[in-house]
Length: 240
Length: 265
View 1 (spheres, rainbow over the protein chains, first blue to last red):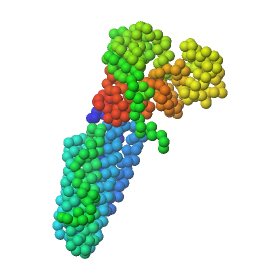
View 2 (tube, chains in turn blue, purple):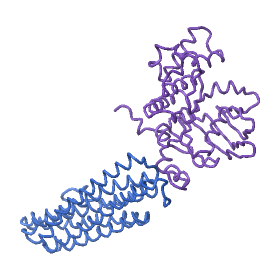
View 3 (cartoon, one colour):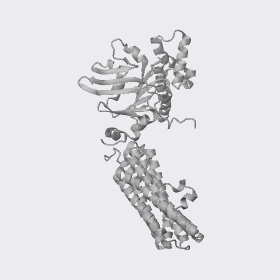
View 4 (spheres, rainbow over the protein chains, first blue to last red):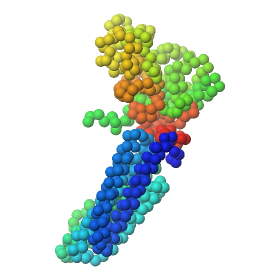
């Protein structure tokens, strides 16, 4: 719906809410890449900064919710306007969680600086992180352009992230079994990989919101999933 | 938390009460209703929405032949209630209007007592044999109109002395006193304050159990709140008809979307 409302303040309200969520998305993208950078380069100062910046993301999330509640109360939006407000609220929650995961990665980076290195894992994590970062970038693009195909594409790509997580999980398990001194580092690395995997899930959820926003219907839950870890017994997992 | 109505807004009945096929209404040369086809379900509140002059009231009035009273008005096509053609030669419009009650925008009680306002319809249709019968009809109607408790001690006071909201509920009670099947409401709350509006809306929801209700409203939120089905009229045509949930969250026609979201379209 590109035509304007008769009450122009309504247009400004809706545009404002969407601008806020995009601003928040920018901050989350930043937090994600900075957390990844801090982890890779062992930059504790940057990690500290990421942790501090999460407050700004949280506050924006609160502001967006307050703003959306005001729009619902005062404008009683219908149809695509209603879907816009609902999607913005939901996307804001997803982004807020992604911010928390970036903060958690930064926290663990500080701890990992004092543990031993685990070969190969940082490269795998980098690979995973860049896959999720590009998903997030595309989903925001899909949101701005109301592009269902691109949102569907992002949704499908979550499978790859899940696969990377499964592989990494097995590899961390092997490291832990080989040498128990690796356990502390591996546990933290596992949580980092799980955080990135969860960011992928939230990005997928944003993609679903974009589809709902445009079509009025949530996509069917028939997407390919690779959730082997949570269904497997311990002895199955160690068979790599 | 026994009341899950807010999320359970489905249409419970699939039986068609009112069926309109290829309905055209003309005022002289003006083609006011253009080829409207609609099936209105039994025990359902159906809302007609649309901008002023779109024909929603005209169509509503053709359901109980109120348009007959306008000389230059001509209705073509087929309107059936329970399968019976209401424009059939053998149908007495007065009897039809006893079955298809109507409530108007402005409360219009007769300048008589509260009791006589209710008793008038049943009296002319011969529905009560004795005074006791009539007392029962009056009490039952006022109870169904959700106004009994407010007026039971002053049944012989003038109906015009009630507040606006009470007058409107009195008019609804009057409309249901003749045991109609269908209740037509033409903007029943537009002259009422928000509290009286809520009371009438609550009443409409209760009436759905016994009657088929069709309501014309300019308040989009009211249509969303009280109805299960919504029909959007524009320039004399029925543009979109569907469940209220669909119309208000995901309308199919861009004209519906423009109208309900307050856009210049």
